[in-house]
Image (tube, rainbow, N blue to C red):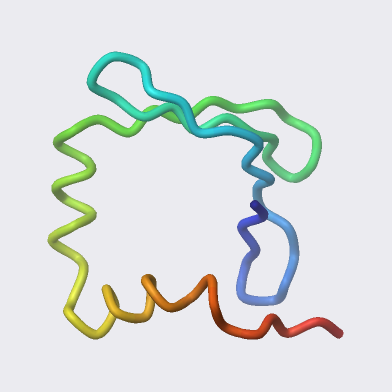
Length: 71
C-alpha cells in the first residue's frame, strides 16, 4: 500500500501490518528509502474513530471497490 501526498508524490510504502500486544505495528519505508515502524495504540485508534463521520465511514468501506486513477 502506498500513501501519497496531494501532488501524487510517494510519502510512504506500507509493507506490513502486525499485532504487537494491544497495539498495531505499521511497517514500511518513508520516501522509498528510510525504514520505519509506527505504533498505533488503543487511545490513538479511538481518537481516529472520532474523526469519522457516517459519510466518511461509507466512503472508506467502498474505497477498495472504486476504479483507480492511473495516468
